View 1 (cartoon, helix red, strand yellow):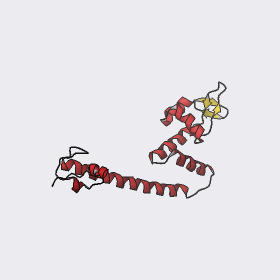
View 2 (tube, rainbow, N blue to C red; view 1 turned 180 degrees about the vertical axis):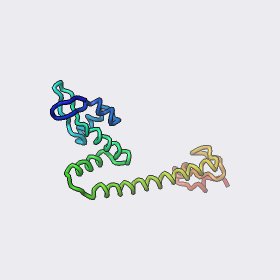
View 3 (cartoon, rainbow, N blue to C red; view 1 turned 120 degrees about the vertical axis):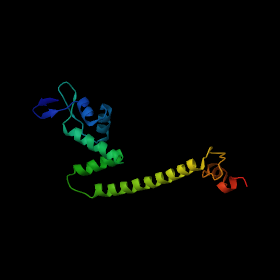
Length: 151
């Protein structure tokens, strides 16, 4: 960190290290408008204000919550306008609905895989278990699993 009349500034590597990102991420976020382009030191190095670390941490946390970078950019832009909006709450509610849908899909997948294990399936296309829950071969030919079973 260096000290100058405008206050302390951090170089790219320092910001990246403290925020847990790589330096290329800083430049990418600058191009996307997520973080402001930093001032330059007399030697031409990027000189970031310390708040950049906090902003990067917030961006990464939002991504972990499932927000895309476009969504994060819009939320940051809304926040920069300085007046409260219901936008974050509405987006969080929509994200909860997405998460719930993914949980439902994963639950269905888990149930199907459990059935495969329990039935002792041994092939996707020519399973020999008596009550095969895998309809893949039949679906490909338009037949039901019951039609695929030997009588």
